[in-house]
Image 1 (cartoon, rainbow over the protein chains, first blue to last red):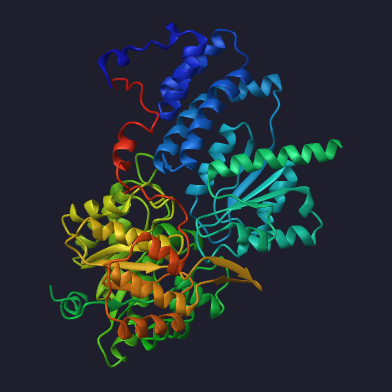
Image 2 (cartoon, rainbow over the protein chains, first blue to last red; image 1 turned 90 degrees about the vertical axis):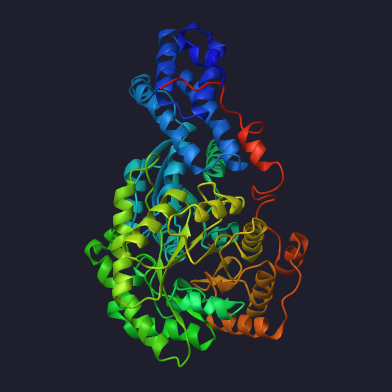
Length: 233
Length: 343
């Protein structure tokens, strides 16, 4: 890009310009710049929750949309998510102090036998980027680990990921166990992974199959909203 | 080169590869979550049956049961020290079946991805990746594989690291990537970009292509992308038998043997020379594919519309090779980048 663009001083931008610049910097995966931007906004008296939603979540939404539309791919999204994480590392303790609301809580992990966690990590980061609380169980989770975590964390959502045809049937084992224990309706169950499709998701009894991380975030938002409406009705 | 695959490619217009490994092993009782590679030791007769199924259906080439036999993936089953050994046994059983077949059949040593993301985005270093691939390559070589067969790769860095590991083992190889994200690999590689990638390697593969992904139609669009770039190397097509469905506790792929026979003929018309299936492809599919390839004469290069008519719709409108796509990516559609700070 042109030389003058190299000289942008974040602290000299007004709030609106700075937020726009942070959108661009998130898109480009510039972690240091994002952390600087977060600190500037906090210094200017922005509430941590406002920094999160207006600057970071807003920026990640653009990343998510372009990922969904096939304009960005996994490497770029991982870099953006890494920049987001930098910003979150500043905001997280502040958010906890102020007791800011979270949209919902998700327990996520790849199923037993599957170590392919790229998709799961993306979902995890994009969900955090959208303001969800995420408990990441990592790879290779037997059914007990999912159930223990759901219980302990009082989660709203269970996310399961599998990349291999040899591991995807295990998702049904987990869902069947939830049904057996009478807990299936306590959670929104989302599944994802390259070999899966909507029909598979339905057949094993998940609430939805999510094609990619951006779709997972949208689906989670809609379903949590619907659940809240139902509970308050 | 004196390897069997290169010799067959010189004398034959097309070769039939094999079908699925996972799908067929499930049918023999493999449980979800278990490592298929451990069966090389504990259930060798079932691995023999897997290989024999492909050979008896007419495959000229089959892949060994070693897709996940690398140190990174075996760690999950606490067998990270057994990559060489399990790869070797997979190839030994393959050698036995190929040699007993009474004709020339290529034993291709399957090498799948590590499952890790490479630097700088991920944590796997280039040096470690090369080491992992080299170890598996030596095992497959010791077991008597004719060639190595890299498959289901998404990242160009990982593809290059594998090529380097294979060079260290001094083995000829083939390599396929999986194009499952809007016509690109998960990491954004287009068919045209893969052609550039393979031709830039110091030890290029004997043949390259696509496997798995999202159904037979998408795979053939990718093959058209390869052959449009007029590569020097033969092209491989190994597509799934339709899409996975869950029926009575099993994964069932909805592609019939008849559909896969149409796919095989179209794949050849698209310019592929090594044609096989991936997930969901069983011996009955392979037999029909072989019969169709033998019965029909090669036809015109199909259009995208003809592929859709025969095999069903694509999973995405475009695949990144359409006119202007590269320019879009470089400027217009991408938002980026108002600035790059000097670092």
